[in-house]
View 1: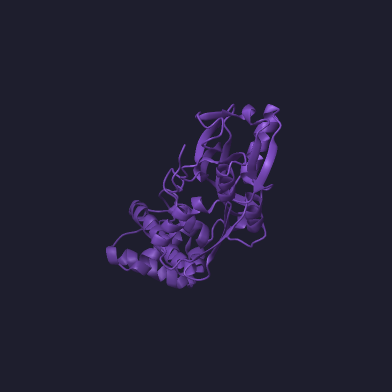
View 2: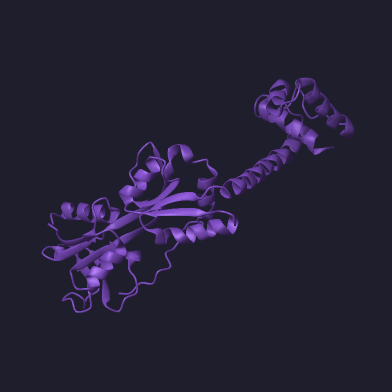
Length: 302
């Protein structure tokens, strides 16, 4: 018995006959018949019987021995295909850098570290921006994948949820509300808000919740990064609004949970719909922890 003979047998079963198996394997039909006959002759057994026996996938009819052998060869060659795919992915990921557009690179780094452990030659090129910019980079092909909040459900994009977190308010320690643990959304009315620029998923989520509650917001400042929002809040310029995991350790700041209602923000990994079967996308999905999103290791304080 040879591996080549087993591959021929599996191809005949999977493709429903000798002619189809020959086309799939790039062999002549007589060569396929000869390989299968040699396998049967070596072990003095019939594996395929066109006259009786339960039908196999694709239309070929297996004997009892053939059905038992198929139970072994099917997973065997499925594993072989996975091994070939893994090796091909490893080669592909060692080429050009993976282009990633991210609205919050901190979410991304543990995931890329996991990819690197599996593919040591993988390289990355990160472009930071807001959610709208990250999604547009994916749409237009300027990025292979994106990490962005509030990714729309549209036909041209494929998305996988990474995590859901709530928005929080951040104030300086001498702010009148710094002594509490929560801040109701209605209490933002009249406060100078330090928020992200238009196009940010954080800003969209905040303004949607405020509109639903009939609350008017006043922006004292907008900024294009979480670091700028936090620096402005630390300078006493108003109430900063960020996603909870964007909070950094800073003795000048207090983090307050937004309530009435809580405002969730969903972060996604996104690619073009046609890129779901690329080595890059498969490598990123394989690196995701089972049932969990990659964690941002940045410390937080309240």
